[in-house]
Image 1 (cartoon, rainbow, N blue to C red):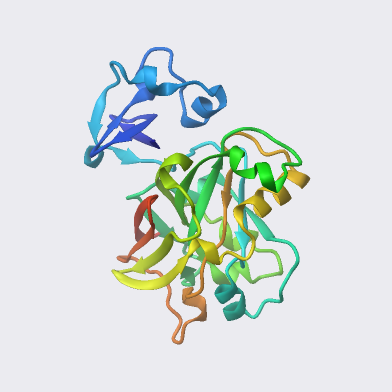
Image 2: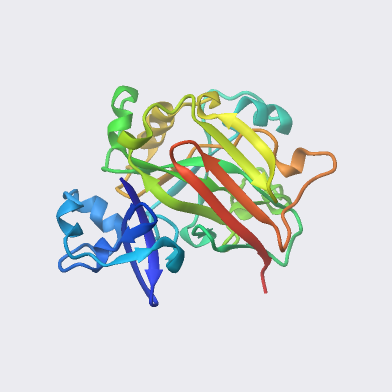
Length: 279
């Protein structure tokens, strides 16, 4: 299934995608109010399809797939090509930082380049959504905790990211990251290793790799994160970007107002955002 959060007629809700439409399961009687609550309930949502309003996808406003996650944990430097282009040392553990929920926008919405910087960079990534809570999760059980996969653009304000050794300021300006268009369940995605991830800026390919090129794979990431924190339903883990970021190009390539940026992952979807200057 493909799950999404969206708004229609100024009302936020969630539903499942069928073809070019979305069934608004969240608007049916007795339904959980948000996708996160639906995942927490762990119920079979197919019964909610009866009588659910149907809306064309091109008539709704996409919201971030999870609008209210408890945590958004991001993995940095998780593709060898990207590690090399940044000049960072090899590490024995994943490099982690945190994004806040208000730093994300949905598919089709504008990413905002802040007034404080022109160094607005793209980072196409795979995100996963946690489907059940857990601590000390063994690698052999890690995929049991994945509710689904989503495209992510970890938009980064590079000069603010480099103020110190900590990444957080450059990763959390409001509305700088894209998250969508929907979450695809693992049964529809299948094995990840050979799936291609591509980032395009104004239709030009600027990043291209396969998910199998991650340095730390998904079981390793889930196991590591669940050791120091309890993973909760609806948490988001963003798994890193391939090489080709704008900061390391010659000349450097920054996103600017009027641009369109896309992140596409085989079998998962295509996330598209425009870029505007923040007011």
